[in-house]
Amino acid sequence: MSSETLAGTEHKMVRAVEVLERDLQGVRTGRASTSIVERLLVDYYGTPTALVQLAGISVPESHQIVIQPWDRSVLGAIEKAILKSDIGLVPNVDGSVVRLNIPPLTEERRRDLVKQVHKRMEEARVEIRNLRREAADQLKKEEHDGTIGSDEGRREHEQLQRITDKHIADVDHVGAAKEQEILEV
Image (cartoon, rainbow, N blue to C red; front, side):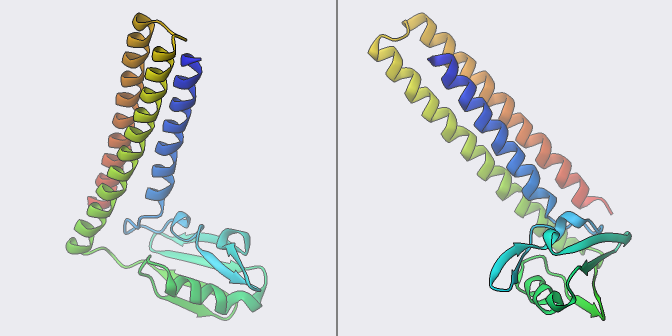
């Protein structure tokens, strides 16, 4: 049972790191990237729908994103969703497409983005530590119930700590890479 607990916990920790990577893709770095707008929810006939399902998104230049909806009637809803979002870009509706010009980042804005990255990294670390605590409680319960011996329980706790340390290091690596990308001029 304890090896199943460790395997399940490790899978959840991997997912926490993946969620962090996906969240950090949406952080603007001064370069245009489709990941900035792909997950925006647009009110499409009363249903919140991801922008990527409503339009083709491309990056024709390093500082511009072009959104071309498949249904022209949704242009206004796309514009409204971009304005309501926290990406800080102003859409230019150009007949049948929406253009987003990405201005170069100021030093102050870069520092704010780095703070945002650190906050998201800390949230991921807390999630991983909570998963470790839950697994440790489960291992203690199994040890108390007599399902596993004390030696095996100690080995499982050590293995759990190694898994936790590995995933915390993954979070730090992902965050450091994003921070470097943001600070790159």
